[in-house]
Every structure is written in C-alpha cells, then in structure tokens.
Length: 105
Length: 367
Ligand SMILES: Cc1cc2nc3c(=O)[nH]c(=O)nc-3n(C[C@H](O)[C@H](O)[C@H](O)COP(=O)(O)OP(=O)(O)OC[C@H]3O[C@@H](n4cnc5c(N)ncnc54)[C@H](O)[C@@H]3O)c2cc1C
Ligand code: FES
Image (tube, rainbow over all chains, first blue to last red):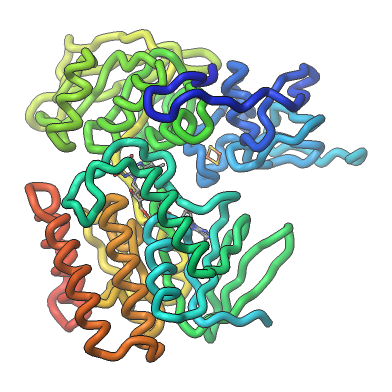
C-alpha cells in the first residue's frame, strides 16, 4: 500500500508511470523507486525461497545490507531489490535457491 | 590513478558535515557513497531533533539533510554516488565499484563515516517475510512511501523503536503493540508519551516468543518475563499482526576500519566494536579519521558534530588551519557535543567516549 497523504511529508505527487513484469504478471511502478518498494506497494511479500528448506524470505533491512531481498532481475540472479531501481519493462522473478543465470539476457 | 586530497567514505550526516568542514577550510574533497542519493539515514528522519538552537533543535531531520546537501554543493565537494567502497589498501588507495567496474582513488587523508546497521533478533519465525528492521520500515514509509503492513508489532522501546512506531502511525498503519523486554521504556520519555497518547499498548517485561504464518507474518506470540528475563508460563498472548518490526539496536559498520588495520575497543554501550580514536577523531592509523555511528551508536546530531571535528582536524593536519584556528573551532564543536551528551542517556555515551579517547592516550582497556 502506498502512503499517498502524509501529515509531514505532504502529498505524494509521483505517478505510477512504468510497468514491470513480476513472475509473468504486469505491475505498475514509479520511476526511480527500488524494486522492493514497487512489490511491497503491490502487496507482494515473498521475494525468494531458500536453497535447502525452500523457506520464504522478503525485505529485512531495506538498505542493501542483509541480502534477504534478492531476486532474479532481467535474468540476473541475486540482485538486491531494495537498492535496485525499477526500469520500464524490467522482468523480475521470485528466486528459487541461488537462482540461475538466463542465457537469453 | 585518480588522486584526491581528502576522501570521505559515507555521505550520511557525519560524512557530509566532515566534507563541508574540509572544503570550507580550502581542502579538496571526494565523498563516496554506495547509494543513489547522499544523506545516509538522515532523510528518513522526519521527526524534530533535540538539542540546543545550534543543533537546529526543532528542525526535522530531512530538512537538516537538505541544508547539508546545499552546502556541500556550494563548496564544490565532489560526490561519487553508486560507489560502494570495498577496501582500503596500502598508501591510502581506496578500492570501489562504479558502473560495475573496479576503480581506485588515492587520498592523502581518509575520513570513514560508514554508519551502522540494524541488529537482528532470533526467534522461531524470525525469517518470515514481514519481520523486518524498524529502520527498514522507516525507510519504506518515509523515503519510498510504501507501507510494509497494516497491523504492526514493534519490538524494542529505544528511541528508534519509539520514533518509528509514531512514524508508522503517521503513515497510516496501526501499531498494535510495542514490546519491551526490560521493565522500563528504553528511549526518551517525550517519544514514549507521544505513542502512548496515540493509544499504542506498551508491554514492558515482555518479549516475542515466536512469529507465526505460512508465507508471511500472520501473528505473534508474546510472553511476559520475570526479573531474571525468564518467560513466565501462562502469560503467552497471541496477537494478530502482519508485520513485526525489530528495534533492538544498531552495530557500527566497521569493516573498512578493520581492513585498514585500525585498533579496536569493545564498548557495549557504544554498540560493540569501535575503532579507537582521539579527540581529533583520528584512529590509530595516522591520517585516517572516523566519525558518526561507526565510532559509537548515537544520533544524527552527534554524528554531524563528530564529522565536523574530523573535518577540522583533517584540515589542520594538511596545514589549511593554524593550530590556534583549529583549536578554537574544535573547542566550539566539543562544547556542543558535550551538551548533546548529557542526561541519563547522553551521560553514559559521554563516559564511554571519554574512556575510548583515554585509551588512545595510553589508558586502561574498557571492560
Ligand atoms: C535504518 C536506520 C534508521 C535510523 N533511524 C534513526 C532515527 O529515526 N532517529 C535517530 O536518532 N537515529 C536513527 N538511526 C541512527 C542513525 O544511524 C544516526 O541518526 C545517523 O544517521 C548516523 O549518521 P552517520 O553519518 O554516522 O551514518 P549514516 O547516516 O548511516 O551514513 C553512512 C553512509 O555511508 C554509506 N556507506 C557505508 N558503507 C559504505 C561503503 N563501504 N562504501 C560506500 N558507502 C558506504 C551508507 O550507505 C550511508 O549512506 C537510524 C539508523 C539506521 C541504520
Ligand atoms: S532487504 Fe536487506 S539487502 Fe535488501
């Protein structure tokens, strides 16, 4: 959910002006925001599954320190989505384990 | 190889303040930060700051940040963004990554201002999506303007826990419980009464036993603690929630100081291992300075003052200030720092800092 109105920061005037594809589904996002913010705004919380026990993981630190939020972005695995900004047409996948590099990048 | 007179690593309040001081003295500065934007943790701090008028008390953190950026720009500080520094080599060669490539820059002096990272807490379910740092939630709501959840449990009642609880309310979330293991609230009374007035239930002598949920947080079991911090049977409560924020302290981000070979001291009240430094913020390595959370967890106001000290001392060592000029400037900063480090919380930090500085002058180790 986005914070549109805020008593101190005021109105958020930015527009959802780009589209990203998350696990095959199109999602609207704001240019310049991190991937994790766009996913959180869309209610997506599971970003990857762990290699051994297949457990879900999501955002933990939001400042690029913990690597809990890594996903496969445009075919590149282990991208920290909390510090990587969205781009129009970006293809994002929930990462399974350590992920795989895709040939057709 | 690229060269610079003074390299500053980390563009948070400490690094920005240091850069301004060096540049104001006529030094040439390169400021490196791994983020897309400078400011460190300052732009998520939308609350009013404490302190005296000189500390711009009553001004909100992000406004102070805007002023710092304006000054760095005016003074012509070179800022390298998206540039994580991965090591400091011999002769002050700094290795960093930019555009996916390895780069290097050599400096005559280095000021480290890398800040801190949030501590985690281990309990069953602590890895479930929806369990996150309180600072992470703060970043999401105040910088990216996205709510991490609607029903939030905050764990920890230090200033970060209290401030972020209030900011979550401001952003439109429901903070349904604030849990504190100690018998008393950890942070400032002013912050605590604000969230109490807002109707947030505060559970002191409680801890989180486990977080439940299939793919993400669905609730948490909290449990009362006795005087020995042992769980009391029968006091368990299940609270429905979609997010659990952890605010149990920060640890200095000291990797670069370790890599550079600084001597460290272990000071629990400053957040753990911190590089030893003197009253000029110079570490055990000549020409290498440190400031801000890296040298002990405090707050943005003291981080800025420490950055100023490091900047002035660094300029002095380069001959940009005479001894007298530098002494006068530094004395003013120390006076302000000392007023920040008063009260029950500040006093503890001041004592710890004094001991740390004594150690540089050959004093005893801190237990
Ligand atoms: C998420 C979070 C939220 C916080 N919220 C509050 C709050 O609400 N109120 C409060 O009083 N205190 C808060 N704090 C404490 C806060 O650390 C201080 O208030 C203050 O920001 C410290 O300033 P600093 O300049 O030392 O560090 P920071 O502001 O953390 O700045 C350090 C900068 O260095 C960069 N950096 C680190 N390592 C490298 C590297 N290797 N290469 C390049 N760049 C690097 C970091 O990305 C960052 O931009 C918070 C801390 C965190 C981590
Ligand atoms: S959430 Fe920690 S690195 Fe992204």
